[in-house]
Length: 223
Length: 219
Image (tube, rainbow over all chains, first blue to last red; front, side):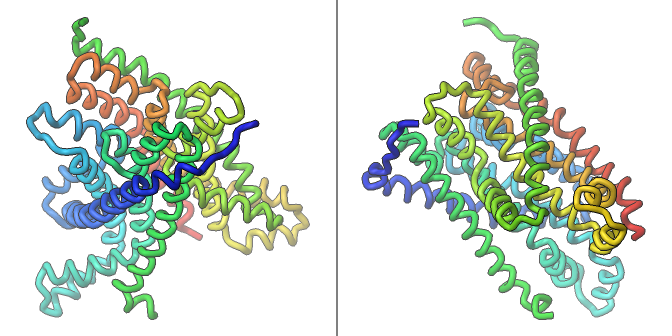
């Protein structure tokens, strides 16, 4: 192998990389927050909601979990305009990530909810809590606490999966790497740097979510 | 321009889906073999081996599969090999699957009660004998459902190989779209075919979990 590695382009192209990182972070943030919210709503519908709603949600979850993210993205970005639903690449990327995490999050959170003993609902009611209060304090928060590690890894997986949004020209970190390699002809180096950044982002996100878990659920953690 | 009927679209996609199936099989089987080797290093006695596998898993689970595909594709090229897309795709997916399978199986091996190791070693069994006759048979029971579940991830992972130019179901979808200008229909079909490939696997994973758990719950 007589190939001279050259990272000199980093000097010229770092603003492109920074912009890419910011977009990846933004996608993860929006996707994470809205995706988990959607997941909670769907988990409620499946575990405690009316039966017809549960059936719809179950179909949605199965559809999303058994098709690749890339195809979901293409369907939203290229396919939906045929129905008159048009959106920019960033909106499409965000939407795809929310829908994707929503489905996985639903299954994870539902598992947590189902681990709540039935008697706790009655206990909540006997304390004079409303149904919403019971759901929030007695069911949801302990459920989230139980499944927080699994949910955290799913959020990291969705962040890493967001590399695919470069394929609909959303200018994330992978897009930046593609752009740089097309300019500098240093394909291996630019993807190598992007990969290292993704690794750092994944490790950072994992730590952040762990810290977040300790902040949101301090009571049980102290035990 | 030629006219594509719906049947033409579907037929072309189904032909391409064979490559998705083949690549999935190769990746899953190759990944299992590499993953098994990594598993032995991960739970073995050598410190260096354990550290290596831990780093390996961290890297492959902490970076996007797409980046791994790019690095394999362009990295092999650095050695002066003319890399066909299928080779880079297969290699990257094997290494990626191995990382996840090792991690899944490690959890299963660790779920076998510690007393089993002690009991078998008190019977004078060596490491390989313990693995073969005591630990693996029990771990396997626990391992089957999540392993089948992971095969779904492999099938979905193959979609990304379209980006480095391997012509499988997703790439065929893009090509057919470019010829027909009917993205809604085409990607709808593509999603449906993936669903038909993945859903039976997901379902059987769930069923296996329920079935195999019955015996497991009792101890």
